[in-house]
Image (cartoon, rainbow, N blue to C red; front, top):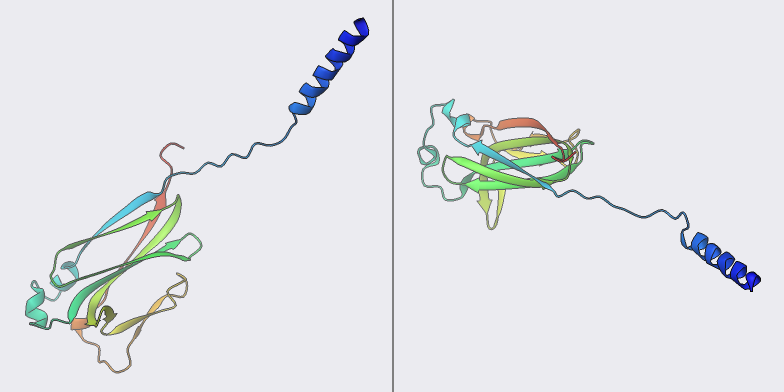
Length: 166
């Protein structure tokens, strides 16, 4: 009888030992994306030239808009997101990005754009190589003469997103 109890105890201990193996438990911690909200005053760049009314500059040309392009790059200089806004009057423009924790560079460009069918294209400038912060640039279109009317307003900002709980 004692042998049966001993064998039973030995079997139970070996089952416990094999059931409690030292396997790692896969835990993945994710944090919700954070919103970056930016506000751009479209009139500030044109105030330099005494322009306070968009319509006084271009008259009733229905195909010309103020175009605002914001490019968001991660810490390695890769394009993460792009936001474009087009409007026909001066005022504040709001743009929003949803991003993970990390460091970012925001590059914002404002200039006049021309509406062609359902797309918008800068009148004087083209973006070139915008997928990398180190290579992005604006190139003048060949057939246009540079004029204050087609000025560029350019701003950049370093942004760091951290988790509020850590």
